[in-house]
Length: 202
Image (cartoon, rainbow, N blue to C red):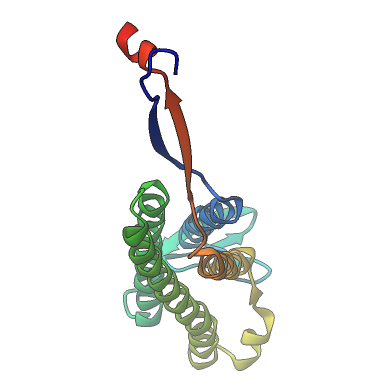
Protein backbone atom coordinates (compact mmCIF):
# COMPACT_ATOMS: atom_id res chain seq x y z
CA UNK A 1 0.00 0.00 0.00
CA UNK A 2 1.26 3.56 -0.64
CA UNK A 3 1.09 4.52 3.03
CA UNK A 4 2.85 1.34 4.11
CA UNK A 5 -0.20 -0.15 5.80
CA UNK A 6 -1.50 -3.57 4.83
CA UNK A 7 -5.18 -3.89 3.82
CA UNK A 8 -7.71 -5.44 6.17
CA UNK A 9 -8.99 -8.82 4.98
CA UNK A 10 -12.32 -10.07 6.27
CA UNK A 11 -13.79 -13.51 5.64
CA UNK A 12 -17.57 -13.54 5.37
CA UNK A 13 -19.66 -16.68 5.68
CA UNK A 14 -22.57 -16.63 3.25
CA UNK A 15 -25.47 -19.06 3.61
CA UNK A 16 -26.45 -20.59 0.28
CA UNK A 17 -29.66 -22.56 -0.21
CA UNK A 18 -28.96 -25.65 -2.28
CA UNK A 19 -31.68 -26.31 -4.88
CA UNK A 20 -32.17 -29.95 -3.84
CA UNK A 21 -32.72 -28.94 -0.21
CA UNK A 22 -35.13 -26.18 -1.21
CA UNK A 23 -37.05 -28.66 -3.36
CA UNK A 24 -37.12 -31.18 -0.52
CA UNK A 25 -38.45 -28.49 1.80
CA UNK A 26 -41.21 -27.68 -0.70
CA UNK A 27 -42.07 -31.39 -0.82
CA UNK A 28 -42.34 -31.38 2.98
CA UNK A 29 -44.79 -28.48 2.82
CA UNK A 30 -46.66 -30.34 0.08
CA UNK A 31 -46.99 -33.36 2.36
CA UNK A 32 -48.51 -31.18 5.07
CA UNK A 33 -50.91 -29.63 2.55
CA UNK A 34 -52.06 -32.95 1.09
CA UNK A 35 -52.52 -34.68 4.43
CA UNK A 36 -54.73 -31.85 5.69
CA UNK A 37 -56.92 -32.19 2.59
CA UNK A 38 -57.21 -35.94 3.16
CA UNK A 39 -58.09 -35.47 6.83
CA UNK A 40 -60.82 -32.93 6.11
CA UNK A 41 -62.42 -34.78 3.19
CA UNK A 42 -65.33 -37.23 3.37
CA UNK A 43 -64.43 -39.03 0.14
CA UNK A 44 -62.25 -41.86 1.37
CA UNK A 45 -64.75 -44.58 0.51
CA UNK A 46 -67.50 -43.89 -2.03
CA UNK A 47 -70.48 -45.58 -3.64
CA UNK A 48 -73.19 -44.42 -6.01
CA UNK A 49 -75.03 -42.37 -3.38
CA UNK A 50 -72.81 -42.45 -0.30
CA UNK A 51 -69.31 -41.34 0.64
CA UNK A 52 -67.48 -41.87 3.89
CA UNK A 53 -64.48 -40.22 5.51
CA UNK A 54 -62.69 -40.26 8.83
CA UNK A 55 -65.25 -38.16 10.63
CA UNK A 56 -68.55 -38.26 8.74
CA UNK A 57 -70.70 -40.05 6.19
CA UNK A 58 -72.55 -38.23 3.43
CA UNK A 59 -75.31 -39.47 1.18
CA UNK A 60 -77.67 -38.29 -1.54
CA UNK A 61 -81.32 -39.39 -1.53
CA UNK A 62 -84.05 -37.96 -3.71
CA UNK A 63 -81.66 -35.25 -4.91
CA UNK A 64 -81.09 -34.15 -1.31
CA UNK A 65 -77.57 -34.36 0.17
CA UNK A 66 -76.84 -34.65 3.86
CA UNK A 67 -73.94 -35.57 6.13
CA UNK A 68 -73.72 -36.98 9.63
CA UNK A 69 -70.86 -37.69 12.01
CA UNK A 70 -69.74 -41.28 12.06
CA UNK A 71 -71.13 -43.33 14.99
CA UNK A 72 -68.99 -43.42 18.09
CA UNK A 73 -68.87 -47.21 17.99
CA UNK A 74 -66.79 -47.19 14.80
CA UNK A 75 -63.58 -47.15 16.77
CA UNK A 76 -61.39 -47.82 13.74
CA UNK A 77 -62.47 -44.51 12.19
CA UNK A 78 -61.50 -42.51 15.29
CA UNK A 79 -58.23 -44.43 15.56
CA UNK A 80 -57.34 -43.73 11.93
CA UNK A 81 -58.30 -40.09 12.42
CA UNK A 82 -55.99 -39.80 15.42
CA UNK A 83 -53.18 -41.42 13.43
CA UNK A 84 -53.65 -39.00 10.55
CA UNK A 85 -53.72 -36.00 12.88
CA UNK A 86 -50.59 -37.29 14.61
CA UNK A 87 -48.86 -37.67 11.25
CA UNK A 88 -49.85 -34.11 10.33
CA UNK A 89 -48.53 -32.77 13.64
CA UNK A 90 -45.24 -34.64 13.26
CA UNK A 91 -44.97 -33.36 9.68
CA UNK A 92 -45.46 -29.79 10.87
CA UNK A 93 -42.71 -30.19 13.47
CA UNK A 94 -40.44 -31.73 10.81
CA UNK A 95 -41.04 -28.82 8.41
CA UNK A 96 -40.24 -26.33 11.17
CA UNK A 97 -37.10 -28.25 12.06
CA UNK A 98 -36.12 -28.36 8.40
CA UNK A 99 -36.47 -24.58 8.10
CA UNK A 100 -34.32 -24.06 11.20
CA UNK A 101 -31.66 -26.34 9.74
CA UNK A 102 -31.57 -24.39 6.49
CA UNK A 103 -31.27 -21.05 8.29
CA UNK A 104 -28.56 -21.92 10.81
CA UNK A 105 -24.91 -21.28 9.95
CA UNK A 106 -23.47 -23.82 12.38
CA UNK A 107 -22.44 -26.90 10.37
CA UNK A 108 -22.59 -29.21 13.39
CA UNK A 109 -26.10 -28.05 14.29
CA UNK A 110 -27.19 -28.47 10.67
CA UNK A 111 -26.25 -32.16 10.69
CA UNK A 112 -28.09 -32.79 13.96
CA UNK A 113 -31.20 -30.87 12.84
CA UNK A 114 -31.33 -32.59 9.46
CA UNK A 115 -30.98 -36.02 11.08
CA UNK A 116 -33.78 -35.15 13.49
CA UNK A 117 -35.93 -33.96 10.57
CA UNK A 118 -35.40 -37.16 8.61
CA UNK A 119 -36.42 -39.21 11.65
CA UNK A 120 -39.61 -37.19 12.09
CA UNK A 121 -40.47 -37.52 8.42
CA UNK A 122 -40.00 -41.28 8.58
CA UNK A 123 -42.27 -41.57 11.62
CA UNK A 124 -44.90 -39.38 9.94
CA UNK A 125 -44.87 -41.50 6.78
CA UNK A 126 -45.14 -44.72 8.80
CA UNK A 127 -48.02 -43.50 10.97
CA UNK A 128 -49.94 -42.19 7.96
CA UNK A 129 -49.39 -45.42 6.02
CA UNK A 130 -50.83 -47.46 8.90
CA UNK A 131 -53.98 -45.31 8.87
CA UNK A 132 -54.33 -45.51 5.09
CA UNK A 133 -54.03 -49.29 5.12
CA UNK A 134 -56.27 -49.91 8.12
CA UNK A 135 -59.19 -47.65 7.20
CA UNK A 136 -60.50 -49.30 4.00
CA UNK A 137 -59.96 -52.80 5.40
CA UNK A 138 -61.90 -52.00 8.57
CA UNK A 139 -64.59 -50.17 6.65
CA UNK A 140 -65.24 -53.06 4.29
CA UNK A 141 -65.33 -55.45 7.23
CA UNK A 142 -67.92 -53.25 8.92
CA UNK A 143 -70.07 -53.20 5.79
CA UNK A 144 -69.87 -56.97 5.45
CA UNK A 145 -70.90 -57.52 9.08
CA UNK A 146 -73.71 -54.97 9.40
CA UNK A 147 -75.18 -55.01 5.92
CA UNK A 148 -75.72 -57.43 3.06
CA UNK A 149 -72.38 -58.94 1.97
CA UNK A 150 -72.98 -57.93 -1.65
CA UNK A 151 -73.15 -54.29 -0.60
CA UNK A 152 -69.42 -54.23 0.07
CA UNK A 153 -68.71 -54.87 -3.59
CA UNK A 154 -70.52 -51.61 -4.50
CA UNK A 155 -68.03 -49.42 -2.63
CA UNK A 156 -64.85 -47.97 -4.12
CA UNK A 157 -61.85 -45.90 -3.10
CA UNK A 158 -62.44 -42.12 -3.18
CA UNK A 159 -60.15 -39.34 -4.35
CA UNK A 160 -59.24 -38.23 -0.82
CA UNK A 161 -57.77 -41.66 -0.12
CA UNK A 162 -55.46 -41.30 -3.11
CA UNK A 163 -54.50 -37.82 -1.91
CA UNK A 164 -53.42 -39.47 1.33
CA UNK A 165 -51.02 -41.73 -0.54
CA UNK A 166 -49.76 -38.77 -2.57
CA UNK A 167 -48.87 -37.08 0.71
CA UNK A 168 -47.00 -40.20 1.88
CA UNK A 169 -45.07 -40.30 -1.38
CA UNK A 170 -44.18 -36.61 -1.13
CA UNK A 171 -42.72 -36.93 2.38
CA UNK A 172 -40.75 -40.05 1.38
CA UNK A 173 -39.27 -38.20 -1.60
CA UNK A 174 -38.44 -35.23 0.65
CA UNK A 175 -36.80 -37.54 3.17
CA UNK A 176 -34.66 -39.28 0.54
CA UNK A 177 -33.61 -35.99 -1.06
CA UNK A 178 -32.58 -34.53 2.28
CA UNK A 179 -30.67 -37.69 3.20
CA UNK A 180 -28.72 -37.67 -0.06
CA UNK A 181 -27.84 -33.97 0.20
CA UNK A 182 -27.56 -33.71 3.99
CA UNK A 183 -23.76 -33.41 4.15
CA UNK A 184 -23.37 -30.99 1.26
CA UNK A 185 -21.78 -27.65 2.09
CA UNK A 186 -24.23 -24.77 2.39
CA UNK A 187 -21.75 -22.10 3.53
CA UNK A 188 -19.60 -20.12 1.11
CA UNK A 189 -16.55 -18.27 2.43
CA UNK A 190 -15.74 -15.02 0.64
CA UNK A 191 -12.79 -12.73 1.30
CA UNK A 192 -13.46 -9.03 1.46
CA UNK A 193 -10.45 -6.68 1.28
CA UNK A 194 -10.81 -3.23 2.83
CA UNK A 195 -8.15 -0.55 2.36
CA UNK A 196 -7.01 1.31 5.44
CA UNK A 197 -7.98 4.70 4.03
CA UNK A 198 -11.55 3.40 3.55
CA UNK A 199 -11.60 2.39 7.23
CA UNK A 200 -10.35 5.85 8.23
CA UNK A 201 -13.08 7.50 6.16
CA UNK A 202 -15.70 5.48 8.03
